[in-house]
Length: 534
Ligand code: GDP
Image (tube, rainbow, N blue to C red):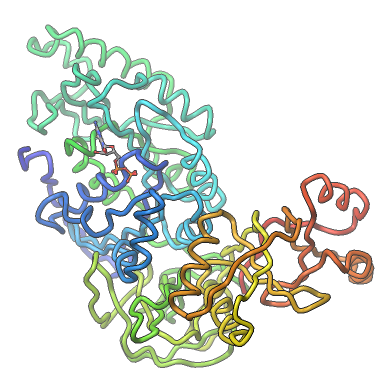
C-alpha cells in the first residue's frame, strides 16, 4: 500500500509541559474485532515498527487457551505486549495492552484505570459484542473518552447508519462521524475525511477536496458513481441526526468521534492516529484521597495497576507497572509506598516497547514505568515523594468461582502460602482465609484463571495443588454503617464467612438466591461486588 495513507502532517506543538505531550490509551474490543491488526498498523503508521506483522509474532498468542498457556510458560513474552511506548508527531504515545480473553477481565479493568483514552474497535459485521460492552462500561465508570473505530469496512457488514444506531442504542453514547466510508465490502471505494475535508481512495490518494459537502456534487468522477452518491446521502442523514464534534464533550466521555476503516488494509489508520494526537486528552487528574492529583503537581506520584512476577524464572523478578500521575520522576529517586509506609530507592525503573526494555531516566505524568521489586509493591499501591495520598478506583471484583485449595504434599504448606500470596498481590487470584478453620480459599472471575494459577504455582513454586468446590458460588464484601449489626451478621453467618487479604469480611453464598435472601434478611448490611484495593 502507498505510504501516503500513513503519512500525517506534523503539527507543531510548542510551549507544552512535557506531560501535555503524553497520550496514554488502550484499545478495547471483542476478540477477533481486529485489535492486534490495528495495533500493528498504528505502530507502523507512527513509524515505530518497520512493517505491520512484527508485533503479531511476539504478542501473537491470542485468545485460544493452548496459545495462552504456552505463552505463559515462556514467561517474558506476555509482558512484551503490556505497554508499548512510541513517538508520534511530537507526542509520546503509551499504548497499554488489555488482554483479550474474557477470563482476564479483572486485569483489563485495572489496566483501564491507568489510561486517559480508549480506542473502541468494532467489527462492522458484528456491531457491539459482549466483551466490548463490558469494557465500555468500565470506561464509562471513569468517563474515559472513547474514539470509535469501525473495522473491516472492506467486508460486507451492517450499514454505517445501522452501526451508529446500534452503538448509540446499546451504549447510550453520542457519536459524531470523522471519516465516512464510501461503500462497503466489494464496493468499498474510499472515504470522506470530514476534518481535512477531502475524499480519499482506499490507498489514501486524494480524489477531491471540498469546502462544504455540497461542493462534491460538482465533482463529476464522484457523482457518476452511485456508491459515492449513496455514501454522501447517508452521511448527510447522519449529520442531520448526530451532534457535531465538541472537544469538551469528548473529553468528558459523552461523545465519541467515529471512524470507519480497515485495519487489515491500513485504511483510516493514519486518521485514527491524527484523531488521537490532536483530540486525545492529556493526562487527566487522578482520582485520589484526600483530593484528586492534578498532573501539573510538581511532586511525583503514581500508582501500581499491574504486577507481573517471575518473568525471569532464574531471578524471581517481579515488575510493578506504575502509572505516573504527577511530577517529574528521575531514576534513583526515593519514593514512599503509602500503603506500607516504606521508602524505596527506584534505581532501575524501565520503559517498554514490545520486547525491549530500557532504563527509564525520566518520566512524567501519563508515562508507565516498570519497577522491579521483590514483592514490596502490590496492585493498587500509591507511590509518592512522602505525601499520604491514596489513589482510588482500583477495584477487586467479587469472584465468581470459589475453591478450596488442596495441597498434595503436606510438607509444602509454607511455599503454598507464599505462592498464593504472591499471585494474589499480582492480581492473578484473590485469596481468602476462613474465619473458622484454616482453609485456604481462592476466588477468581474466570475458569482460565484457575488453570493459570495451578500451572504457575506448580511451575514457579514447585507446589502441586488441586481445587475443590465448597458449594459456594457467590461472594460479597459486607459492610455496614452500624458496626454492631455487622458483628451480629458475621456471628450469625460464621460458617459462610471468610476474610480477604486485608482482613475485610466476605460473605459466601451457595447461589444467587441465598445471596438475595441474606440481603432481604439483613437490610442494614451492604453486600458489595467490588472493593477498592488498599
Ligand atoms: P483481535 O482478536 O481483536 O486482536 O483480532 P485480530 O487483529 O487478530 O483480527 C482477527 C481477524 O480479523 C484476523 O483474521 C484479521 O486478519 C482479520 N481482520 C482484522 N482487521 C481486518 C479488516 O480490516 N478487514 C478484514 N477483512 N479482516 C480483518
